[in-house]
Amino acid sequence: MRNFIGAAAGLIGAAAVSITVAFTASAALAASGKLVVYTSQLEADAQQTVDEFKKLNPGVEVEWTRSGTTDLMNKLRAEFQAGSPQPDVLLIADAVTMESLKRDGRLAKFEAAPVAAYQKDFYDADLTYFGTKLITTGIAYNKNAKMKPTSWADLTKPEAKNLVSMPSPLYSGAAAIHMAALKEVPGLGMKYYEALHENGAVAVRGNGGVMTAVAGGEKLYGVLIDYLPIREGLKGSPVEFVFPTDGVSAVSEPVAILSTARNPEAAQAFVSYLLSRQGQELASSQGFLPAHPDVAPPKGFPKLTEIKVLPLDNAKALAEDQANKMAFADLFGG
Image: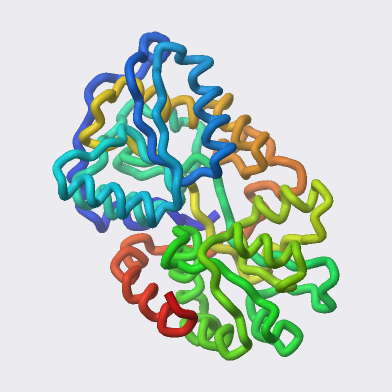
């Protein structure tokens, strides 16, 4: 698998603050007090994650806020500016956003994080953030569609004219990563987005809107994160998901502890739970590809090693993020 998390670790200065209290099993049991989590998980998944964590840590009171990564970051940056960041833990869509926080010295180093079983691609080399799953972006299509797409270029064909929906990188972290990744693929690049626009593709706010449009037949094709169509397809929704032959972009839903965390012990316990085999089995049961190599993928997914993930230079993606969003807005609106 190509490196999509750690590519920029050596390029961006790490001003991370080290939390010196090492996590141990006894520390997990001793964790207590209030823990504040900001997450971009689906609401039901976030609640289940918190509930399972609390079974192992009954002394911890978890207060969580759920929104899209972009909205959460706007909220958090306002809190930074006011001098009062609230969360102990961030669990958000993508590593590029985490890199920006790391660059600004906002993340704490967790040296005792339980990452021995993980591929190094899945966590920051400086141990400030850790991938918890793999969420790819591919193509969903309605089963009534005449064309069965196999590559990204298929969405620019006449058969897909005015029939494509996609999430906007202005609101979706996964969509921002997807755009950054496709821009680096020979034969695609920014011209690909121009071709999508010329073919009548439309942008909606997030992945949920794309799923609704494709499942309902309003659009026959969608640029979409994997778990929504796979999960709903197994329940009978008339959608199929394709991993394009030219590769998929991916986010890892990384978790991190803020350098300003008020309860670092509970924060470490939460991160350690997500990275534990038990936490990874929960992710798989929720319909996500687990990051832990020994945990089986959910029904409907290929093995992690069978997926072609497009490479991503996190440092470059971070530097070009605003320009990418402006270029997208110029084509598809804000």
